[in-house]
Structures are given as structure tokens and as C-alpha cells.
Image 1 (tube, rainbow, N blue to C red):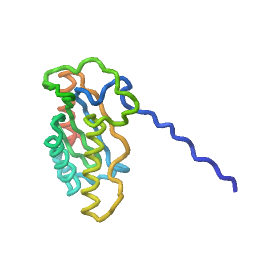
Image 2: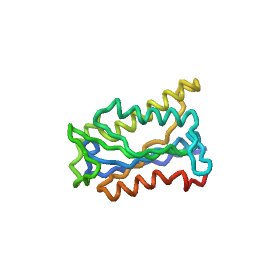
Image 3: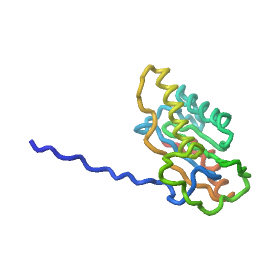
Image 4: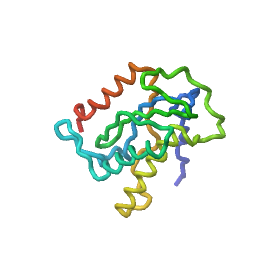
Amino acid sequence: MEMRTPPKHDRQSIRLQTWDYAGPGMYFVTICTYRRLPVLSRIVRAHVHLSWIGRIASEAWWQSASLRPDIELDAFVVMPDHIHGIIMIHGKGISIPTHRSVGDPIIEPPATLCRPPASLGAFIAGWKSTVTARVNTARNTRGCRLWQRNYHERVIRDERALFYIRRYIAENPRKWRG
């Protein structure tokens, strides 16, 4: 029997190559559960009913802002198999007023810095890790995956985009077809 080499996965970053994700900015993020399993909530007549896992995810989300003074959280929703949220990174002591447009991209830090400590990626990784650890401790399921690899983000560049994304997040449960 011939052994075949599995196909090589050339994973390319889905991030903007010239954007500084540790600098000031606003982001719309979507984080999906592993295999899109609906473990976070149920939607009943457009109302979100959190599961115990969804409550852990929501509590950890809002606690993150108090633990990280460089982060400000905005609209957020826990759907059955994903979350949507808006994250504002003040970065390097700079404040982002909610009416400000995010400027042109800045050159990204050197490639030797895998994930700068106050970056969007560090925030997401910390949040995912915290929620996963709490859920696995409660279930006594050490090492079980809860989240898909990576996350989706969109840089929010102006007030108009922020308005539409906030509306999208608020209306998401009403549009759920699970």
C-alpha cells in the first residue's frame, strides 16, 4: 500500500498586511465555536437565551475591559454558534473618541513580534483561552476545543461603518435562522 503525503496547508493571514493591530483602532470581530456547534445560546422569537457556556463567554468578554485599560468594548451579542463584538484599542496611551475615523494603516510591527501584548490578536487569544479553560474546568474535559482557529475581523474606519455594524449586531438575533 502506498503512503501519500497529506496536502500541505499554506495558511495565509487574513489580516491586513499593513495594519498595526496593536495601535489605536476599532474592530468588528466574529468568533465561531468549534465546528459551529450551537453551544452558546438559543434564539427564541428573536431573543437570546444564553447557555451556561454563553454566560461564561459573555462574562469573560465584559471582564476583559476591566483587566485591560487599553481596550474598550462596544456592541456585543452571543449567538448560538458565534459571537459578534466591537473592540476599540486605545494603544500606546492614545484615546479613541467614538466619533473619530480611524486613519490610514500604519506599518505593522516587525515579524519577530508574533502577537504584540496589547494587540487585537492578544485580546482574542486571551479571551478564547479564558473561556475555554473555565468551560473545560466546569465540564472536567481538559483539552477540549471550544473555538474555531482564528477569527474574523473588520477594521472600522469611520462613524458610518460603526453605526451599521452596531445595527447589524443588534439585529442579528432577529435574523437568526438556526
